[in-house]
Length: 398
Length: 186
Image 1 (spheres, rainbow over the protein chains, first blue to last red):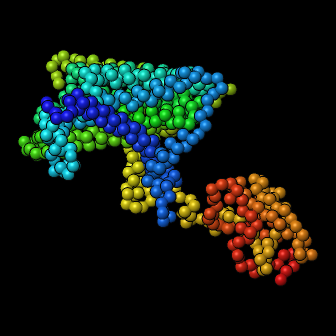
Image 2 (cartoon, chains in turn orange, green; image 1 turned 180 degrees about the horizontal axis):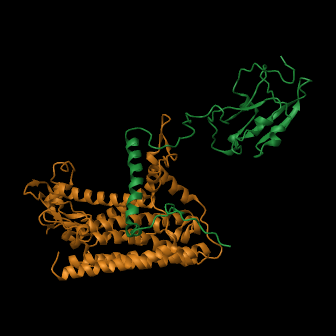
């Protein structure tokens, strides 16, 4: 692979850098979108109107409220200029470290998730609707005709384990914040959060083991590739069709892991103020909230990657649609890649919507019910699911 | 002493249904709950997208309830005499009866020897007022009334919510029954 003035390492570096930025921004924007939909979707489904007062005045007496999006901006400004209150006796190191433990794992776990298939820039920019871009098409055709990359930041062969390892770090955020705040409400919130997240992480992992047994993979790229195949020539081998039961188990465990509504005991407002981040104020509190919203988006990303075929569109191959009745629709490379990205984004949006809808529809569990559900129902059911899957795989099914 | 319930075979003494296994799985109920809220969400969303109002709430300062009762206790007004002066005789009855202590009256001597007193300051702190209407009932000379409308009872700071004498007099009513205690000034 020759390049006139750029080495292949430089090109790879630039590509990875751009991809990482894009994925980080995607997760960040999803967090912002979730904090918007936390207000607006809840309002609309309760027949209210929701946040619409924060606005930018326009000339002519109009006000730009952007359906409540300006409220996010107002939030950011407000939390930045607020007093940074700290309790009188607190553990400086742990108190500040907890924010990073809560926020960083939420943002970096999406690195191993593929957002689209293989992208060939030389071919990508040949599409008729991208040819107007001034310098890029000629650059890639002349200098890097064979260059291609996966739309995935880190192609780890232990992707799924990486996700569990990193999202397990979230627990430290809750524990450290609860312990270091020197507040009994924070302490209780932290303890609740710790025991809840550890309990549900087990059933979350075991419910996914069935998928690993079927696909014989923990590499997320390969998992998505396996889900693109067709069973009986028409049914995509998505995780939901192979492991429907595991999907529900994983979804509930993931919501509990995420400390969202039916399981939001760690921050139950009516009982323990705000749980483990009671003593955080201003931008630190915003970061905790934001980490929670990004984690919702991340649960949506994981569910759509593992159970709904990731970026794959049914019957869409690298050159176009291969319909199950034998037809074929030719599509250009750029169209295919864009459709894959759109398909992934739509799946993520759908699950974000579903998680928010469930959060605003359901009442909170009691703590003993929560523990009972985790240990006595979800865990045995996921083990049962795993055993049945193993037996079927051993007998030669799938 | 024990009380034996009569045996009514058709009666249930509590209306608690026995939960089946499907109910205990909780998934069906989640589905029902999400279905109900989704119906509301998409119905309202469709209304918003077709430029109609999708909520049942009222955007207060811009919109008013269309179905306010004529008896509604809304904003306060001070009744004028024919010459435009307030009918109030600064007797402090309303300020005394006000449960929210939102009325402040300072009296001064009136030009008219029979009326004796008139308010120099008559402030109602609308942000504290609970709209109970006791001031209207307490007034011996029918000097304070409440309109059914609730327009513009808003302000960006709390000092703008204090309505003074001139604001309360500003509604320019046409009053014909201006006879107080058998005395009709001008």
